[in-house]
Length: 116
Image (cartoon, rainbow, N blue to C red; front, side, top):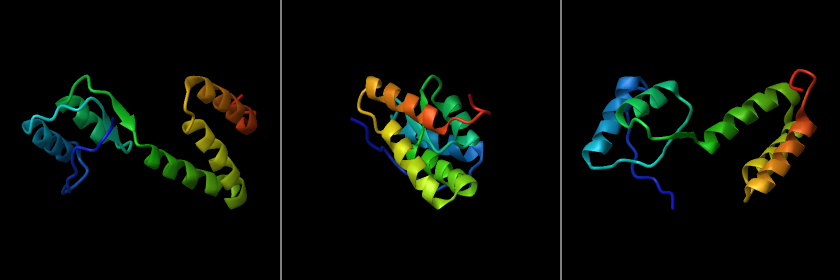
């Protein structure tokens, strides 16, 4: 089961700010199995320093927000809705087999000469 262990407000988003927060968690005896980040390099660097060897994962919500922002600027709202639906099919797959099937379909549907 996955659950959040804590939240905090930081004075900034520098590596040192994240190190302080992670050390506070560590001081409480918290040693996470994984750390979910928003893609910020300072977060990743701090987590690797305080919790070496602990895998970091990208937050799917943040990934989706970036993806949709890029999509809307490139292809417009209607195509973006179709793209988002296809993407969600990929990321919400329940099995490896479903993921591989949907990922291949997604790549075929959205490949361009540049990505082939």
